[in-house]
Image (cartoon, rainbow, N blue to C red; front, side, top):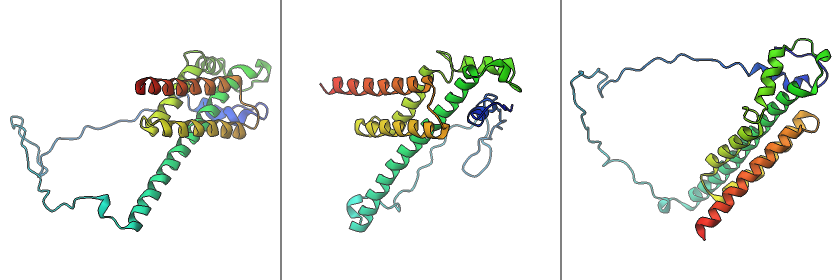
Length: 206
C-alpha cells in the first residue's frame, strides 16, 4: 500500500506494509543415530560416554594480564552493544507506532487518496488500548526486551532504561517532528514498569 499525502507519508508508509505477515514452511528433520542411520523403531535410548580427558580446563586465573584486559574490554563492549540494540529497537517501535497513529487519526478523508477504509480501521485497532501498537503492549515489549538483555541485574536495568530514553529521542529525530501523544504515554508506561521492578527488588532485599 502506498500513501501519497503530505510530508509525513514516508514516516508511516512502511507501517501498513508490515501489517501483513508472511508464513514460512518448515520441514521435519529425521532423527538419526551417531553414525547417521535412522534408529530402529524399537531401539532404546543409548548413552554414549564422552571422552573429556583431553579437553582443556578454562581458568581465568591462568590467563595473562593482557588476555584478562582484553576479556574485560570485550565484556564492556558487549554491554554497550546490548544498550545500542535496545535503543535501536525502541526507536523502531515508536516510529511504527507513530506511523499507525498518523494513519489512524491525523489525516482527513478528503486528503487520503490510496488508503482504504480497512487500512484506517486496522491502524485504529492497532493503537487501541489493547492493540499491538497500543500503550500497554508496546511499553511491555520494550521493558521485556530490556529485562532479557539485563538479566535481572538492577544496575544493568538502569543502563537499559537510559538506552530506552535514547531510543525515544532517536525516534523523535527520525520522525522529523514531535512524536504523537501515544508515544509519550508509552515511554511513561515503560518507565513505570522499570520503577515497579526497582521497588520489587528493594522489597526482596529488605
